[in-house]
Length: 315
Image (cartoon, rainbow, N blue to C red; front, side, top):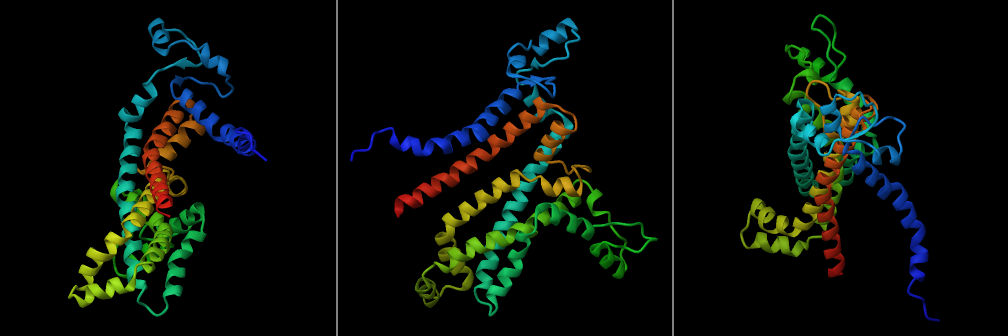
């Protein structure tokens, strides 16, 4: 029985409709809203289509309260206002520090733990934080960083240790801009290092052991074996893990929201978007931040998809 050309589309149509309604349509609405200002809580597509230009209203000193077309003004605010500049700076800092540390630690632990006796127990312990939600991890570490004046007993573990060693307690989450940001990054690294470890360890175990032994017999030391044999073999896996961590890092929200809510120069783009949307009801600027995040994440998603397709083609 011959299958009609349009028959396969009948099977994928429900999935396409769901994706279109819950992903494509909201994305298009978000992009459209990013070009408007003064968008009310209750708005319709007709309100946007009838909206006048914001520049014209300002020139006429009009008391217009409805939405107005702002062009690229919201995107300009992202790169010129102090608060969003801090968020951009912190996102870049998170991107560099967190991605490099999680992937680097995961790779180092994958190689080292391959030689210990209780490898499974060690890996399970390191992977365990993945079972904790970001909100839960934020609350746990907020107690770890808790600060009280020196005249009171310290309830935070880190400050209690400092006091026990004769040092003054530190308000970790208010020491801007480096101490508090690095403290928040430590929570993210604590959670995600186990993920990187598990993926890289599986790839490392897939390396032919005869290849490693041959390099050692030829006189290579452990560092040379790692640099010239292990790293080239794991390059594709490292790229996939690094791009995955980059995507998760760019979207970081929960930890910052729970621990500082972006105060003390710890703001990130996702938290700034949430504030603009639900605290200030600034739908235009919030949508513009969402679009910037999407554009920043998109290249890394494309890299992962291309890697996946290349691996499938090899198979």
